[in-house]
Image 1 (spheres, rainbow, N blue to C red):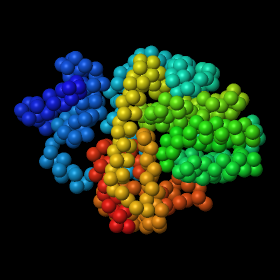
Image 2: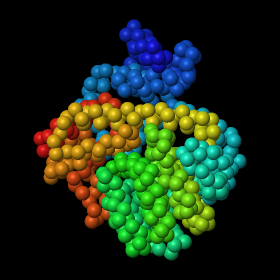
Image 3: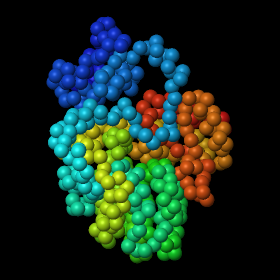
Image 4: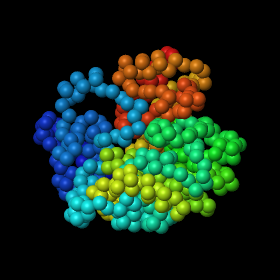
Length: 443
């Protein structure tokens, strides 16, 4: 029997004996780690399993507590299953480990906290990221890395700043990340779109856009795209790069979920770029702590000075404490361990989603569910009243939404339903997707 299963059995036994009562804090992670002679991560995994079974719940910075079954049954009637959110599940985030890193960062960087720091980013973090990015197959110099206040700030700067090619339009996939579209709208940047379908992108159409669209940069999410969950193959990435070089277009690669990649031979677009025109944007929000607001941008030399100037007068510098804590978290190996844990969780959730949809044997609906990530899609082959679908789901305490905000005005399609498992636990997915599929059958 695995150690975390032994811990689960022990807690259940203590509950049965009445040794643990509702409202009382359960044994701490450290206590159980010492008792069972295992790592803290094993204990956390055990508690996550108990949370998934609705036996215990956690209070950040306090501990784990026994669920009051009576109150839980009352709450069940008001519980909402949210398939619309792209925010990660709060219950699986690494608060406790990161708190130790924050305390260390205060000690190490306390002098820097009282002064402005470099707008480029904390030197120690850039150095640590240079080494860590090699695991992503992103090989760069420390001088190429810039730290921003989340990937949203990086996108804001890149969309609004001039590029050496002297062109003005930003090309975006359709659909794409709502935050990028809002950034483009607010900065008044000219934008054009290109459809990204379930069978890929039309390269003839892409070449026409690059050749005649006055495109300064192409904003793309090659892996686990938001909102469709699609990924380009390595060959497709190389083809895009070849066209970008031919027509003097820069690539802005948003690799926000690259940490969840399961295939060893799937690399970022940056890896294959020999022309030095790819900007690599890496967020740490989705598998780490969204509120930390830290991202890294790897820039070609020709873009560095312009990007730095825009960054400098946007916020002077990114929060030093957050940067220092992230640097310690990565350097100590905690980030790598957490990444493996999160990857396992989302792989499991996506497999459950895929399994439940396959069981339903829906007609006139194609399911596009990746092996991991946050997003999957249902494609309706016949017209469906999506407003009815959303309202009916809402009455059943299930949140879904159409993707109008992820499209430019002329591209919106009502034939696709996005399903996000970002903040849904395994049991919620099983219950919620069954209800959605039953409502679709009715519709």
